[in-house]
Length: 172
Image (cartoon, rainbow, N blue to C red; front, side):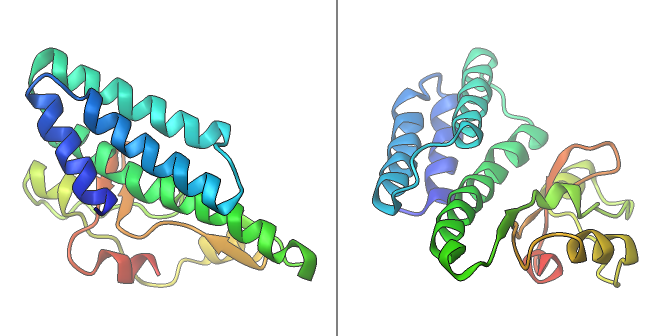
């Protein structure tokens, strides 16, 4: 089962008041992956597990799910996968003298205010795709390999948002 589907099940079970089984499945899947790859669970990955648990328990408590909370939960799939992937790749390339950096796409991509509905602004955002000199400078100053996410950005207030159709192309 794909993590996105598992996160959707988490949201549904949290709204029904019982997120524990879905949370456990997501954590177990990621813990197994880190074991298989030999990288273990980092404090950053544990932080994502903790954040998911807090959000799921909050949804379960009020039995409501806002678009903003949906975006944050769904973004965790990308964040967890790339965090694990970056650590694994770093171990694989270390012997070749190639360093790897993980970067949060929300620190690089800001969604445009296009006057869309509040829901579309959070769950189907768009970003400018023109070259960004300051971002280029930041990436040039980093390691040769940078791992980041597609599909997520932040709005002008710093809130997590999901990119709409073609959003991963913009991220790339």
